[in-house]
Length: 371
Image: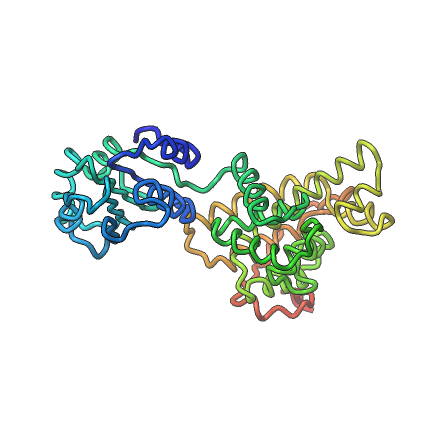
């Protein structure tokens, strides 16, 4: 596929009145696709728009001949027309032939925009579209672009985000930019003018129940309290929290713990660690002692594996994958502690998988052996 341009590059081109006859907005980030459509629409039709010269189609409903017919019309009292095709990946094969002919010789006074989360690169339609159209990258933002986007959106809304709030909102993007934009709009009306948005503000508005934050989850895992950790996980899932967001927040918390441990090792500053973790300075070292560096390294690796399974459709239910991760993390040794050696030939007791996270009582499981 030809190299695509970014949303910023698209905006720059449109400001120079360099409007192309064909665009392809491709990527899984729906907010970016909608932003691209808005930018192109404003460039073609002006700020107020012009319904006489604008048509919108959906790939799973439209016929190729109807799309081509609209695109071939002459603009009414305006220099250009705009034809938008959303869900272009759902265009039936039988309707694509007419579009292939149009793509080879588009109407120069019409701008046609195809938008889709993903297109099959093996199809002739996709190959011709990406060769003839200006392709705009609408994939989820990487960290290098995500943090500036968060700050830019915060400036637009007139709010300031502290470091913890930024990181929590970054993890919230696991669902979509629309979700985090909605959270930031709530923060703009919730936080008083002049005060920076804190991580506590983000957690409060996202509906996290008391005792069910990512910090509480990490603390329960650090103390190897399986029942408590599973109960916290269950509360978050039952309140509608997305499994990927829970996993992302937990991984972020582990990275923060590693950062604080390294801070104490290098400078021994309990006050700075206390500020980062929002804990009493006297509790910092005992708390961090529950997280050996080997455990932090292993935990991040296991989070990465679970992330791949959640995104790759492993077949297991997301809550079961998260339950399994919590069990594995709770079984890790504390700092300075070694696992007892396994007895050669000893039978390993089999445990039945949890069938429902709502059955967690918080009590330690009974031994599967007799007596």
